[in-house]
Image (cartoon, rainbow, N blue to C red; front, side, top):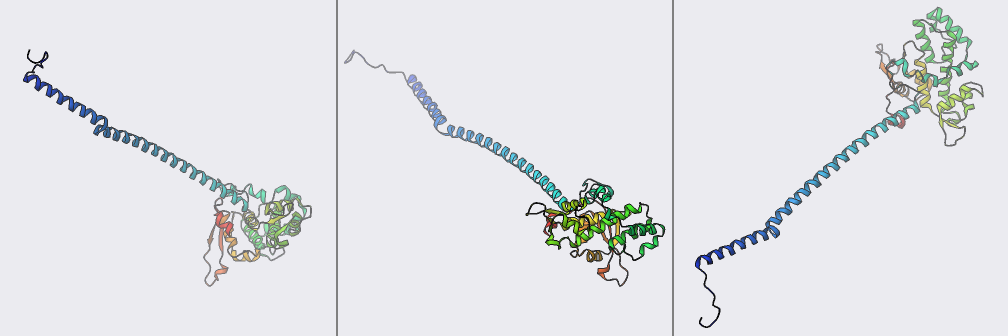
Length: 327
């Protein structure tokens, strides 16, 4: 050995090439690994993870949106039911009790008639029996043309005269005493309506109703009408406020059920004059209680205000309560 005990042994050329290739391969592996950990690969994984999270978030948002839509639909349905119930309850503030599901007109106010005038209270009121009316109805039952006579009975009310005339045309088969009682109830209700709003400014106790309807001061029927056709007052106690709209509806329902076919032909303008109601109020109330109101063709030269109309109870009430309460 010259100059040193150790002398590096020269590698063969082939070994040098292999070592260089291995070093180069190791470099690319490390670079790829680095890229995977910190570069493009990481970005791709991050993007994939973000995309997956976005999909999950979108799905959750869609589920939440669908849930919100379902909740909104349920709320709208509940509101609709509430509105319908509210409207139904409001109708009953202004109308006699009625069957909203009835398809037979005779069944619409079957129970409502008892609310207008309970049969037992009507029978108990001796003052309702007008013997003169009973005698006249007996004459009409025998001689229908006498229904056109002008007398104390037919002059009580145009509505009563119309009813008697219609009953005469088909024949009065009902017991005349029973019919007379019902007609007298109609008359007392009409008197109540005409003066109820003016008497004590429409605020009074049951004795006030008895006074208006010519019943005794301790009349159970007067108490019933006071509770039915007068609403609760802010004054409280036994004082109540006159409810003319409900009373008018009760009058017209009661009158229609005294006719042969729940219908009548009449001059509504004349009836409004008699009742001292607002123009158009009687026609509107007929419609509100479930009637079809059809103008009859007037004879040539007849004035519009003299036009007659055919009124027929056709279906349960469908009145628009918001508009009606605003009137």
